Length: 535
Image 1: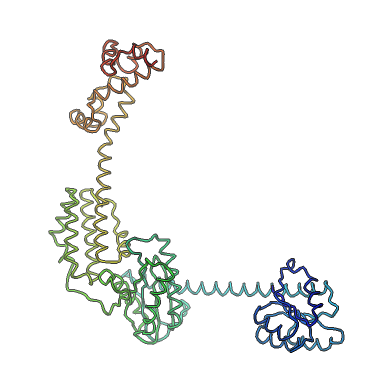
Image 2: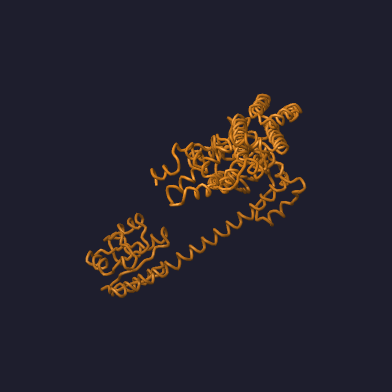
């Protein structure tokens, strides 16, 4: 707490300032003044919590000082200093709410007592205000959550045709603590996008909360009721306004965009999808669906950051006009052949055909979903490319893409990535029998191994296995087995005192002569010479 000392006697001021260990009490003397006017100016400047003042001072006295300050700073605590002759005068100041009065000469114990009493009162008041603020915050948070649950239910109805949204305004106001009134109801979806790369979900959630604060600050006061819900980079706002075009709200959209650029990140793009305004509260489901469709149109309206449903174009075209039977069959046949070039050609052809109609968001979106389903069908039939495709995952990915070209670039790159991954997996799978054969040979090289016995263990016929084994290892079966046996024989010769005949038997040769001949052929010297050189 901050302290101001005011007395026209400098000695009294010095006495008070040295009488107390201010740091030990958690107090700080911010100023010492010698008249009433200077005291008032210091209070206005330094905002002390406690003023220790003489009752009689030049310019205006302590009583006038207290009266002026209590009008402007009602939370300042006052301690009055007075002489015996001024005691009755000092009592008149009590009606202004002074905390204590001290008679001169001032005693340390009395001053400490007065200060401690104020500190206790301050702590109680401070804690009380904190608690009130905490309770207000809890109440506001609870109210926000209740109102957000209303939006969540509305979105659920919008996404499920089996659910019906049918409420009376009074019922909604009572159930969800809303303040809806007769007027117009509009849903606007604010969506964040990061240029050229997708954001992590945690980052999206953080930025959406920041965006929600900005939107609320700019729009809430312009609406009869305003409810918002933030999730995965989107802020969904329901606004109840008096005019159907809510022109004042629209005027703030540019300011929100500027604030997002300044306060979030420069590489973040904000797109606003605006549904139509309706005089019926139950029409907010339709307004929400229109706001969602408007956001889809970012693909074709890449230069606009506010996209209104009422201004959207649509064409009399169907999915089958772009992905016909021939294209479907071409894609599936290319998957069967694992011809990624042919698949990319089909995707590029679709891009060219759709370019003219890219401002029809639903058409582009539905063609995208159809393309993914065709690829999914082909992968299930032939086990290639998109063997783990999750349609819902690709729908979520679509929501993070900003432009038409970016969409098709991403689909093409995704095909290439999936193809490479699949071919790599296939190569690994094809080499597995060779790895199994090598392990079997290593475990049994000292036994009577034959090409037939190893190929039977791996499940291949001997002729195919022989060709496949040489292709993968660079050696035929007998060369590989001989090399392994001689390698182990060299180890025995160098590191043990075993007889050469025993070593030959240990690595799979019962004929010592044959072993010695084979050893010399591989190493250039016979086993005995090898031991002399390296043993």
